[in-house]
Image (tube, rainbow, N blue to C red; front, side, top):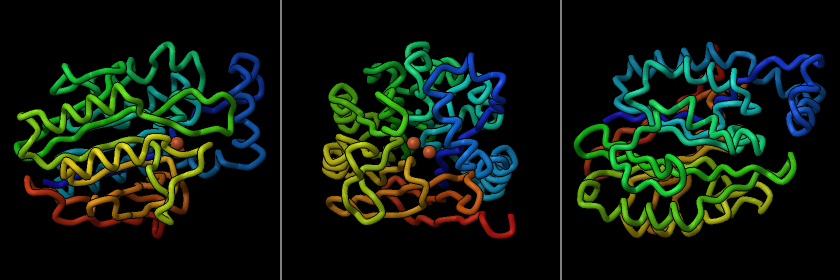
Amino acid sequence: MKILHASDLHFQADCPISRWPRLGWRRVAAQTEFRLLKRRLLFLSVEQTVRRILVDADRAGVDHLIVSGDLTALALPEEFAAAHAALAAWSDRITLVPGNHDRYTPAAMKDRLFEEVFADMLRSDLPEHRREGAFPVVKLPRDGLAVVGLSSARVPLTPGIAAGWVGRAQRDALAAILADPRVTGRAVIVTVHHAPRRPSGRRDWPTHGLWDGEEILDLASRAGVAAVCHGHIHERFRLTGPRGLPIFGAGSSTQRGVEGYWLFDVGPDGLHSAGAVDLSSGS
Ligand SMILES: [Fe+2]
Ligand SMILES: [Fe+2]
């Protein structure tokens, strides 16, 4: 079975200054980074790059697509709509989780915009394990494979803080899923937005990291999970976690200069191979 893992697509809406009064202070503050620091320019080709990734997926015979969060820049309704439209053809073959940018404001979290727009992609094959909204979401795409999506995205106190946590309820649910007879015997891939560890192998900073990352790695590795997939750090890298657990950061699949994804070959006995695909040259 082939799995394509992409992340941090960051679909972005145009926010001219005339629109700022209606954006709220958090999104206005973000415009500093977007405009003055030119972050916006890094994501101008999102739609074309996603199209290219999905063409690659078709050509490679990919069975299932994983997108590990940050589908939007500022959790604006039109950003969600654009991301959903781009991925719609994969709606029955996708696991996706929210990132901190998809929970950018308290209103976006409270209104559950992510869950509303992606409702068709968040249907769980084992809905009785849900503990926090749609999560954990479980996909059983084919015999021998299970994909579990956890939500770690929380509304930050202020822009600039981007930490996350999965929390006790979802961690307990993950333990129950990994022991569920409908899942045991399958290769399991666990997906979460925040990175359990940095490329150096150390824990990420408290203002940016996954606070319960070590608990999740411990749980996953004890259960023999095939891989943990994440995004958030815009760098593509692979680590080996406790008990040999493979951990994959997909980086940003669409950010200019670092575009790309991971392609996995997975069997019921676990991960057979993993290849990092770099789209930055010749794109
Ligand atoms: Fe991101
Ligand atoms: Fe993020």
